[in-house]
Every structure is written in C-alpha cells, then in structure tokens.
Image 1 (cartoon, rainbow, N blue to C red):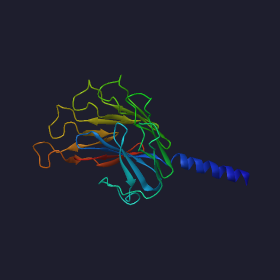
Image 2: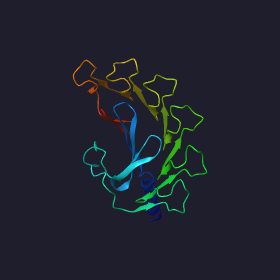
Image 3: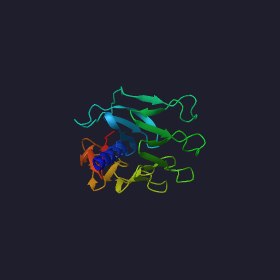
Length: 227
C-alpha cells in the first residue's frame, strides 16, 4: 500500500508540474510574432507578446474540438487573484493566480528592462535579452521554459531583423528584402515545413500558395496568418 501511495503521489506532482505548456506561437502576415499562447488547466489560455507582457487571457471554448483561429477568449469564471496595492509597484493590479496557476513578474528593483515582465507562469520560467544585447531583440523573450529563443539581429537582412529565428531545435526562415514585394519578410519555413506565396503578378498576391497554415514542430504549434 505504501508503494502504491508513493506512486500516486509522484504521478500527481508530475501532472501538476506540467499543467502549463506552450500552446501555440502565432506569426502575423509580415512574419512578426503576434502571440505566444500558454495553456493552463481548465482550457484557459494566456496570450503573451514577444516582450513578455500579457495581452489577454481567458477560457478557450474551442480546445478539444477545433483550432481557435479567431483568437477570441471568453471570461474565466474560476478562481482569479490579483496583486494588491501593497505589493511591489511593478506588479500592482496584475493577475496573480488563474485557477491554481501562480503568475510572477520581475520586480521594480530588478534590471530596468525586466520590470513588470512575466517571470513565471506556473512551472514555465521566462528570461529576456537585456539592454547591452543587440538592438533588434533587446527586451524580447530569451528563454521560454525549456526552450531557448533566438531572434534575427540588426546586422542581418532588413526584412529579417527582430523576427523569431529559433525556438529550441526549431529554426524559422523568412523571405528577405530582395524577394518579390508580395511576400518579402513573410515566413519561408518552420523546421522542415516550407511555405510559398502568390507573387505580386498573380491573383491572390501575398496569400499562401503552398504549405500549412497550422503546423506542429517539435511539440509546439505554429499558426501562420495571412494578415
């Protein structure tokens, strides 16, 4: 019985520890990161900007049925707690708990560039590029849980600068500024998946021609928007 109890306890903590996950990375039409989605328990999603701020969060009624292409979230009716006026100035009024998930932020006495940014969502920790690093990605997310994120630097082609380059083992490439104006700057490949677009002289100019709008690379979903 003791062994069974210990096994159940281990399973419980394992499941609890991995109840947050990187749900999806959305790339908008120009190739920039629009949203980084973090999934929680109870079909809750947190939408983050690439510099580590919450843009919105709520209940995603589509989970388990179909993909939420609209990005619309409904109000979450479970437990919600916010940081109080007595807490550090960088976190006052920000959401602290969504359900049983604790959200922490970098405080006012920490690095100037980090103040108020997400530090952790449950078991997912965040780190960022600082002010002494390349201007194209200063302040952007550097680590997202177990994934290291890199971004194209300011010395690279102008259509690539500041765009997401790698997520862990997944590489992202883009059409550079010398390509057709209809798709320059757009995403060209994610991992082994290639994407092409209609040219400026074709009907549906700039729209996706071949490739998948929604794909999974190394355990993370990517959604490629046309706009």
